[in-house]
Image (cartoon, rainbow, N blue to C red; front, side):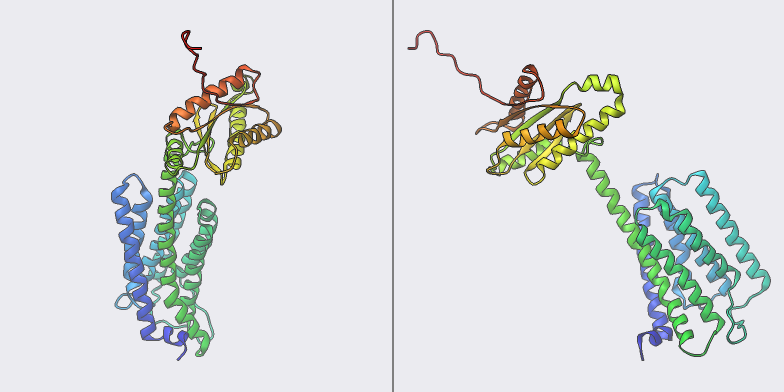
Length: 385
């Protein structure tokens, strides 16, 4: 017996159903936990409702053993719509246009259930051999799957996974219709029954992974926003200091650079905030590029950017000059830079103050320069010879 034949049989159908139920329970549990931690996120409430509706049809064989096909298929259809509404809300608020689209879909689903109930299509009804029967609910499911590619897919981040989930639901519904229709007595029917059994489990597994990865994305986003500057993408001041202190604790011989964009206020006043922000991002990108593999960079505040050079054998003066030259050549602004090597017993904060003083020396001597910090000389007292 090959896997397809086994899957189309009672044992395979039961195994696929068990897999689907397990995945739906995991999806439901995760959604409940997420909802408890974030009650303002409506998406989790939608996922809870959709997963709860999916439990009953997922628990039975293809046609929902022990219940009318009308109930099983109707619950599956509404579950599909609610879950997809939740996925959309994971990425973007349900605005009026999207809300109207889903209202139309829910109305169509209700109409399909009513039409199938009115027609009295029983689960035992079979068409003539060789024909294909698609019940109203099945037609609504297929239509909804196609529309999800228009309404939801462009607005979600995990497009490949989402498209795969819709494809699994779409093909699963076609397999269900083909199995119901008894299109042939050979392998085609076996494939249809196997697909109708396995694809719901695959669909729920993809949805679970999509939700899980979205949660990971959000956690990463929250962490990134806590350590990075929103405009430049560089580390913010506090995290830069943490990283630089970590370098220093390893005895890497850290040197710090303090950079200030020349005439930034004039650029801001004459060409506007947007142009100034673009210039700031350009400079930050150059800084990040030059420090990649050599240390780290951060935004200290305003137009002030800082860097820590922590690569043995690399001269901080060379790094600073490379940054200055690139900024002059690639951006509409210039950069004044001061740098200081951390002597023994000097903290990162103190080294930054020293580099800041050196940067001001660059400003006072004409700007667009690199200046090394020189400790003040100790004057000899009058009594010394």
